[in-house]
Image (cartoon, rainbow, N blue to C red; front, side, top):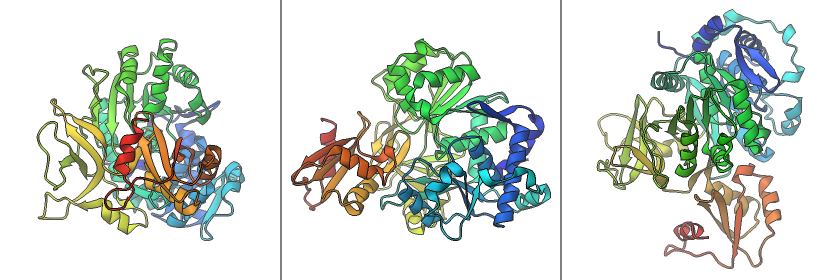
Length: 512
């Protein structure tokens, strides 16, 4: 039977793997039956506090067993979750809460104090440290009845992404698209019921949501890699080795560091059999180090913006790729169609010719939460079809097909970038620096792909202290959005229209 929502997978998994470890969290762990008990109790508590259905519920916790069962509890309650980053400046969290107005926020003592002054009046706060799970009356019949009212196109989650005006956009993804992707992944990569996942991505990433899908659908065990280990790649590898991790799905940044430090030569990963990477370009030289050190591992490059559920193209690396050759993003996933359109919205067919990558299919997001204007601008009618309504998403990514027929990523056609796995609107950084903080009278943010640097060119009579820049900006934006290079100019170069010549600075930054 085709699944309508992800809980249907989880119920079957719990019956099959009740006593198996579902999540490892540092020195703690929880079984599938224990996880089911926690999430059903919390779901009952949510509904006793606020009897809503198909509404957003926020999770403001660090990545932990608690965040896992909180996300599952929201799904059980018939609502959809929105994970918030506890490292994000409070002003940004406030913008998100004002846009989405979640019915409930689930948090704990450690983090509630950060947001107690910005929670909307209508929002109920559930502090897990104040919840007596032994006193909650679990009503399985009520939970089952509520889930029975859902259909597969109801939302599963909101994932926030950068917005040019300073307020992140909330991308709404539904059950059907996650079911579709999970089924495709299982069929294509032959996952077993014994997979152990090395979970490195923040819980605000869609990668983390896929790991939850694997837990629910395949009974996969998730090993939560502590945030602080990001600075200690060797410790991460040792944890993978200790827990016998068989599958990782990582942003390449940490993998590049591991390659540069030659750590795979020192720490063996005999149980790893599958490695996916996505979120940014993986430099081929460093990839080839991984490929050479782990010859029995199947590597796959996945591609997809946040407006696509997880990813829409994939490339199994089953041939030699030279260091100077880009790793292709490959071919469309099942039930996804890829269009490459030129500037006149005509389809590009021949190899080597560039065009914008556009996507249609089940994987498309439902749109941006509470933002119909931006939704209408990004999710548009397929220009190749005028006979009936057919929505595509224009990614803004420039691609081409190589001689093998594989799709290759070339770059962006606008100011949207991928940095450290996060999708960032450079315009949002400019908005904060120039309009909100008024640190400079004018500025231009560009991205150096080679050095992975966000660079600010700005107009000022005298140079602003870099430390002051970073401190002020860091109070408004997450650390990953703070520029790392600053250049003071008496006047920014303009083009013939009088606008800042971004092309000039994009070209200039690669030569710095």
